[in-house]
Length: 618
Image 1 (tube, helix red, strand yellow):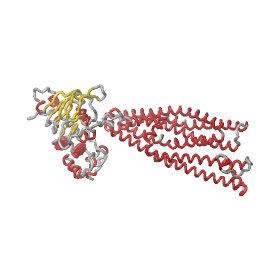
Image 2 (spheres, one colour; image 1 turned 45 degrees about the vertical axis):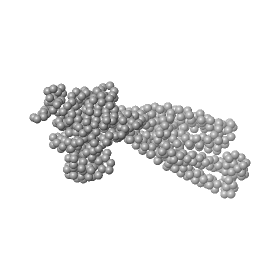
Image 3 (cartoon, rainbow, N blue to C red; image 1 turned 135 degrees about the horizontal axis):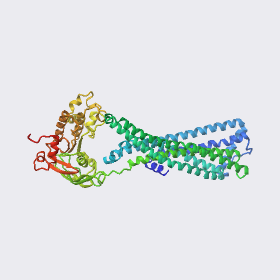
Image 4 (cartoon, rainbow, N blue to C red; image 1 turned 90 degrees about the horizontal axis):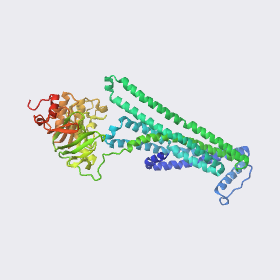
């Protein structure tokens, strides 16, 4: 249970007042429980005429507090019998029992009332922490982790923490209080019998604990398999068009059914082990009661105890009030073990180290009012530390110029672009912006200099206005419309039913590819970046859409430092510098005309011939 208390220390401090109130009312409920059941003793003694002693009023200074309270209670009971008769006194004691029980249940309710904000608040905080960490972690983290598994940790695992650990909080705080208070009273009644109880209860706890440890391990495997299932579902939904096009429905169904079968067996193991908690605790509790009945009865019959029958019954009532909390505590321990397995999975995100960190003493960010140059200085990079993606890349992109990167897929073009905004950090060498190493700038400041237009327009399930204004605070409709006009988007936007307030659906599914790309360009225009990165921005478009998008891009690129990644060489003929990459190295560089001269190495000419692009002047 050490991990459980570690979790409490991490997440409970903001809710200390709720925890304090919960503990207070738990203690109050425990004492009210004892005193309500204490009324059972005189009721039994009156019914069975066990005690015929005569009592006189005892002042506080004539004995211990316990002796004075017990004596005076019997004195007033005796007076009530003399004045009102046994039946009326019995009715008064029964009414007092009801009142005490009402107070006890009220205190129990208030203890639960104050633990609820703590439970809900901790789960809310964990969910916020996980989401915040997801937005902070570098892109490299998600190239290793399955997206579906990350979603499973944020949904299924956090829900399991709520249903297991947080749902058990009340029992974890209430039941130990009840057990401690009841044990204290049991010691006061018969210390010999209670010592025997102290031997029995730890033995039962050891048995339950051994089973609980195995439950945590199995639960972890089950939650991991749930992450695999979520990944398969996410991949299937994302690739449904391809699945249907290749008649692969049976293949993905078999894959999902196989993974679901594994999850089915793991879930059965977890549920069966969890279901074992109640019958095992019931058996252990009944066994303990039977042993206590035998041992306590033997003490009374042999005369080695000063308890009478009524006191022994009261003792057994108190002990039974320990059994139920102990059983609930064991079930809570089972649930907590299952939740701890989910917490371990969530902690893999919360404890993940983000290598893309701000420097201790960041330098001033270059001005965004004028173009900013970019330099690659002997840059080498590898995703896994073994296979090099870039090797000894050196490139100066002067302020306000356009540099194009061309080459085969996998040659390292997109990787070079990702190193500028520090989506990844270089292994060797350095990348500089405006003469400052990107590692010496705050990440937010660095990325504020840049605008991205990607091959796949990444849009959100929101309105057109909010997609264009994404990341720009306090943007007005006039600002957004101005950006849309530059991007050749205003005309089709105004033709939609709600104009700029039109929802575009999941990933912009209600728009054509060209429309999505022009909204993406409008978003970059509104940001007004000093450095522009275009990654295959027109490769997925038809000729008409490409023309409109290219016009928008030309206006966007004007006066900015631009890095263009392109397979279609027709889009980069007017670039100030073209770099040809092959196997992570720049093998050729120059303008379009220079690279087509006979003296050139011929890599670019080969690409041009493959695309049948006419040379300049033809």
